Length: 363
Image (tube, rainbow, N blue to C red; front, side):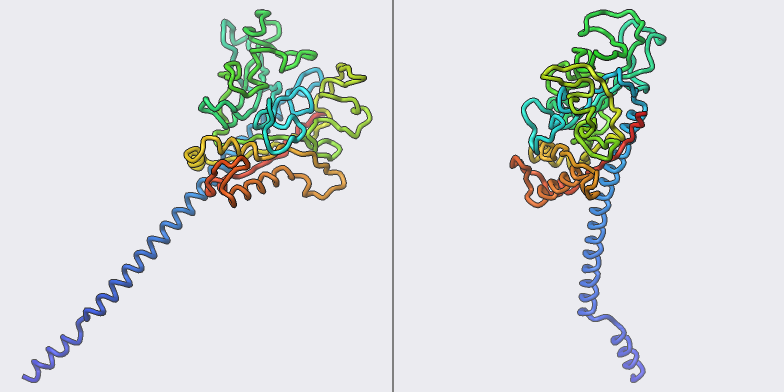
């Protein structure tokens, strides 16, 4: 009998009590919850990092494409270039930093067009392959038509041109154009090249030769690094006495009269391109909150303001990009744009600014 009692006592002492089981379950639940929170946090971080990788990749592709086009740009003083300058330019700020807000007649971002030796869409019509030339009219813009799928996205045009000897109509509204030389300018070529120098809501601005190259890019701006080291909004050296009367890259103004004096981009060492990018997930979030918020933010990101590099601290170069980041920091803090449109803070914090100095190698 004593042996049996001892055996039962040993078995009883070896079992778990109800309290021990409850404590174990509580610890297990706590570990599961804690592990779940870690997984959720890690997933969120991974998602944010993934979107940043997407914007980094797209910015690299866009800037590489622009660099390649500028590298193949025809560099001649007898050709026109539709670029930022004080006169004859419709882009943002008109080349002279009108502040943070888009003014009447301006676009929300810059636009550029030039002749380039690059593959392009061939001209439609009864033209043979042999009649298609190797030169294209290349243009970049942010689409400003809010009725179009490409609204507030970076577009690239590569319009193929015919050889100059090909027989064609004399009506500029219907002509398939060849390369043109000064005094003929890109902006003066009428309906055929209207979209190369405009971004508006008219039918002429919707050109099928445009394609969306940067679906996440909503702001596009550029300025010039001159050969004298200055960073400017006009593509010539204003300190050079021979440029004192220059009014555009093609003309000088003397006693109120313009005369032809084309200089091309001979004073420019590099074109500095800056873009602002928002990933598609956060773009959708912004649009769900306000249909005008992204456009308002595009306007809030200020136009380039002149900042000379000669003898000034290096921080002056890149001032515009820094001002964009400061504007974004304000939107992140306040949750609204300068116009008062609600802007989700997480979306604002996801916007990234990129820039690149592209040497044009003008000899």
